[in-house]
Image 1 (cartoon, protein in one colour):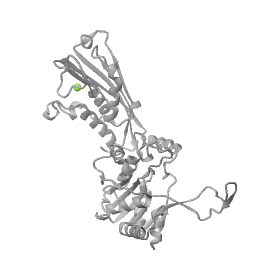
Image 2 (cartoon, protein in one colour):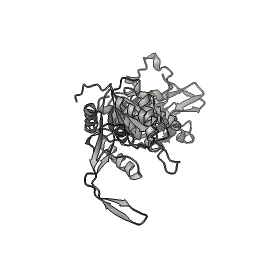
Image 3 (cartoon, helix red, strand yellow):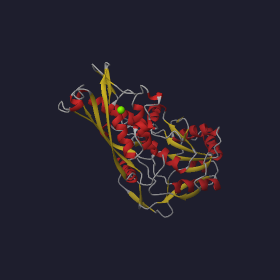
Image 4 (cartoon, helix red, strand yellow):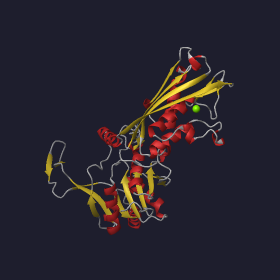
Length: 402
Ligand code: MG
């Protein structure tokens, strides 16, 4: 398939309705973060990259609407992400709910995928789509390589001949009409127990074709799978860069300052075109520096009236968006504020939390430090506040354009 193909009659249905936690306390796997993005967001990005223009629909648990909203914050606005469908009591009901949501659309083919498989390759996805376009129903399979045994009782097992046995993966790829009518037929017949869509389609009388699965297309289920997935994702982000940012704002009249995204009551304010948050400005420039993407003054010119009094989290969020648009992540942010007043210590953790929130980062990737300049220089004379920042980012080796 060429670069110019638009996949706008294709939909990807991501099954994300499972709660998947034995203890019931831990976050469902699709909403856990690896390499700075949720498993679900990695999966959405993967399919959007393989199938530009395709519609992507997640089916989620009714209790997870907030989790979902947060999980997709990193997803680019260019991706055709449909509003989520609400899943049912079983996987089968959840898929039907998603298919019903797609049915009114212009979609001809649907790829039904377990959202905890984040490494489906372009080759696998395109092979599945081609197979479905030919046969109407196609699934990826892999020969079983381990020896197999079957439990007979609690003590006894017996060998199983693995000859001819195949493990089934996703995406399972179908004509939408075929799989939707098969699901409707199964629901009408009271069948609720199909664990995958191929067996359901087969029950409804359709032949299933196969295409080669991939060992790398594994499900993230156990803790060791998370470690393996994170190592693989970080290995793709091997262009590691550090950027530096510096900013100063002078004190002026006022009763508060904004520092590190936190409003601190103070006898004076900071003078600036925006809210004069010297900390967020330095961080923004550090990230832009790591991207070699200009500086805050170029992106948000003080001459532009729309930035007058602007909240500086807008600037920082835009820098972060640029990192994500390049397929990258922020590995670490380190901010040092230089001032005699106000005291930073009591607000340090609030600043870290706010910066982490703006950048959608874990808090242990954000450092805020403070120092005085021993009453020397302009900061020592309490004329203003200076800020220094470092940003470490990771970008894919394979260059993506923002
Ligand atoms: Mg500034």
